[in-house]
Amino acid sequence: MKKIRIIVIEDNRLLRDGITAMIDGQSDLRVVASLEDNVKIDPVILEKKPDIILIDLGLQSKNSLVLVRSMKKNYPELKFIVMDLFPVQEDIFEFVKAGASGFILKNASVREFLKTIRSVFKGEKILPSNLMGSLFSQIVHEAVNGPKESVIIRSVRMTKRERQVIELVSDGLTNKEIGQKLHLSPFTVKSHVHNILEKLAMHNRIEISAYAHSDKGFTDLQDSISSMDESGI
Image (cartoon, rainbow, N blue to C red; front, top):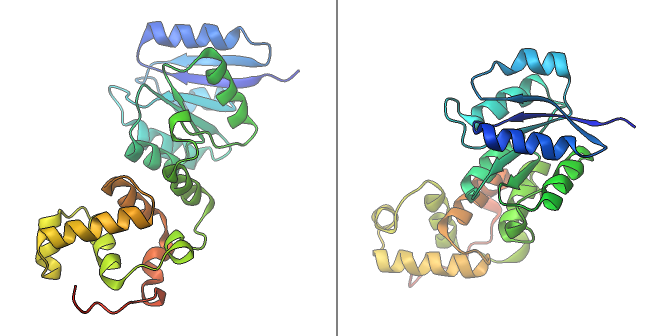
């Protein structure tokens, strides 16, 4: 039986050795290299020919995101699983765009850990379990699989003003800054943001921004969105 070949990149030696021992205890898995982040990875990949690379999100001396992006570009057939204790949504989104296929929480059970590895090897995209089924998982799915019909176009009728607010939120502007650009009071902007969150079933501004940046059609289809009369706003 062909074993799934894995490289582990992790700063913490104790954790690295533990992960290696756990994986090597499986009949269908094999760690072909266990590395610190200061080791040159390209010669190891060429020699060991891994199927999957397990990489710590918070490497000390390198930017893990840049490393994943670079390796995915040089070795597009490789699959990458990112390990972290509590990955934030922004990190997950950026790593998925860079080419990561999955995430493993460092406090996951052994069963979940091994299941993620096997699922990613089969071609599945695996998010942390606490995000599965959420709107954010849908955003990531669309970022990975290419733009589809916009959630906004498909699900709700956004006003022109709400669309303007979404675009400015995605640029990182505060309510006060958005108000200055649109000649609105911060209170009015706050009200628009609240309405947008409700319409899109989102929880915070980060999700609005992630959606706006992930959906290429959001900008391209600006003129096709139904505009409602803004009088009185």
